[in-house]
Image (cartoon, rainbow, N blue to C red; front, side):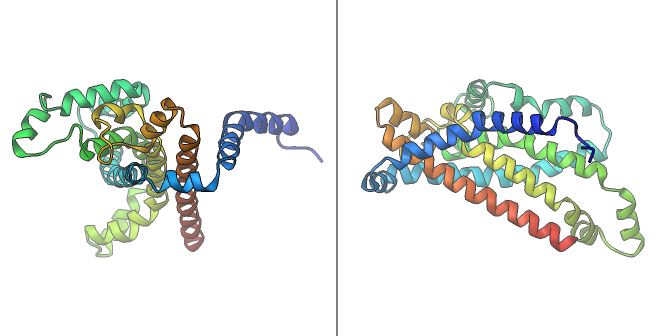
Length: 270
């Protein structure tokens, strides 16, 4: 029997080797390291109010930022695909800016922009809106790094969306809201879920962009990745490993749930 892909065995072997070295072995090493920690120490670490606050901000902020990115990313992708306007190519290129910028540079730029003396922060401070060194700043930083994932995921789906479907719905008497709800949204829902997942996964483990704008105030603006670094600097390797494993487990559960939701939706549509 002739194989469609020549060298399949070699290709698969190299793929598994690469995946093992880059993904599996580091994750396995973390799990093994955490498995050697006494259960009492893990419970003591994970019930620490400072740890709980950091985990809550990391996952809660990531979910909120990913949700907002999904909403605004849809608007941006729609404008880029459906309309032609001056500066469109520049805007399209700027979408990828968070990919190219080092995270520390992004954090410094956002802090300079939204700080008390920044271009935007100086106008928000008199209104009582504090962005830098607050949870709002954390969410904005997470939105900054997650938006490109949503836009780049939605653009191909929007390009494949035939405008004739909308015209047919309109010719049958459907209004704009009905067309959006029954024609456009069902087609884009898998891409929306994928974009949300990518933005959420990117935001959960973000460090460099947030460390400057958050101020790293314990119990207030401290994120879990920063707390892991703090524990490593204090030579508390067991505590750092425990937090990391919990973050890994929660992230995997969330991603698995979203994947099952996508699969169920695709099955129902099929």
